[in-house]
Image: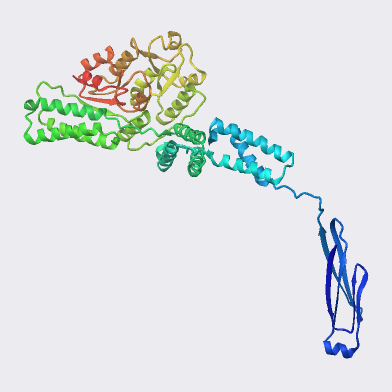
Length: 527
């Protein structure tokens, strides 16, 4: 049973109260009484039976104006025979903790005995829960588990060694700062920036594994390995070394040249500068060339009025650049201030090109003479170029056994032809088809060059020397009014030696760098 008490107050003279639709109180007073009590109050107290579970009661109040107020009351009755539910939350939490240790023991400082004890307690805890044993039994097992867990500590995580990763990141950052020194495209630059960002994030990550760190460090290392440093073209110091050696040789013969103290000191200083500059890794070509010229000028100044009686009076000059293109530029600057006529030729083949150029030369000069040379071997056509230029003769190219049709058309306008090269390059059959041919030929290209010199330049005391195995240098000097003799990089052919012995040249111009004509070859030629 339960007791329900209800009280109410009304400012009217009439008041009723109900419990579950049953009126339990009713008050009806006169207005006189109402004014004395300032309204009316009422209430009830009643015992009600309760069923097991939820019991709902409704209390209502009415006044004589028809106003209604409703209030619900809920009373729960517990089953006297029911057992309170057991709280297993803490025990379940401890079971989970114990299982994590048993399944991954390597993460904890734990012995085999402790693992065995945990397994035993886990099984006991499962039994207590499954059998719905009382709270005291649950608490007992939970306390044992709590105590066992308290004695087991998680291993301290060994932090990854990030030194290598940091080093690779810094190398990448340094490379990007100096990116102008590397062959680096936009994609590679973006990839490096992304890797640097990843490295920064991983360095900050507290639980980063060594595997993650090492993998990213390798990625950065591999990316850096694929980026090459721009090749710094080292200055060519051969000419400087040669001038230095010439200066030393001059000092060794100082008595012959009657050097004064000032001249001797100047040469010694220049030699020392040359030795220091040769050791300088980042020496520029401009620095090297400038010092080489200083030494050369100083030697020339000393020798100017002190030539020894036994010394051969042959002047030499090398015209060269660091490549065939630069050599061509140097030749142009030295020998040509301007050009009245420029012919740009770009035709189907070399034979048509030679024919077209010949037609232009005929228009300009009205010539009736031409040179015929092999279009299959460059040497003869190049060495005859100064002779052809001197006499306003176009050079027409033919094959060994055939005259191309376009060349035949030009030959119809010619009255006389100079054939250059032996029968191995142009046959007699081809020669017989030419108008009034005269053949200039030697045993080889070097001998042919000598024969051309003897044919058209016998009185000259100046000669141009070019490499006979590569076309580039002799090609760019063909229009200079000076005979061309050929040599090899490190050897003087017999025909060229004979030409020098017979001619007594006073000036020798060497075209191309020392890779084309070595300084030892030059010295041998003029000795």
